[in-house]
Length: 228
Image (cartoon, rainbow, N blue to C red; front, side, top):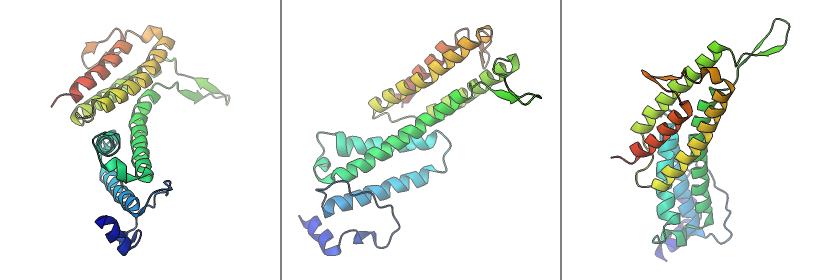
């Protein structure tokens, strides 16, 4: 192959020309110089995407990375019609899969932070002990207010920066993960404070079943993501 001959004449990784890039592990025993080149190329591309995403507001960086990595994985690894899969090598696949998992983890971490707003708070008593104030009326009210304010913020960002319309499987899987993460946490919190269950407010609307409201929100996210 002409490309392989050119890379061989250049020397393994000499195409980096002194550039300071991460050196991915050579996990593929059968990877040759062409696979090394592809791996370095993808590594540089992923690093560039990560660098660009750092200035974005959560959860936009993870959405940005997921959309790009999903596109690359679908077309280079998962597609049966792609010839790239035959020449990429296992190291390049590992690199893309690892970056994808990291982006997914960061996306879900945003929603874990949301459920963290429902954590029972504690304070120190004058006798040196720790007192659980999570059931205090004002504490519950503040937790619910912070929760729904953050939920509104995430809803606005998720509508503005949607998950890929070209990858409904990605969108559906992530929304299922988010629902499974947030709704049980919220339901459990409300079960601990049943007298506050009818006092959840979202904008000007009174919501009698807050868990249903949260589920409905994520269903709407799937609808918004599918629109152009």
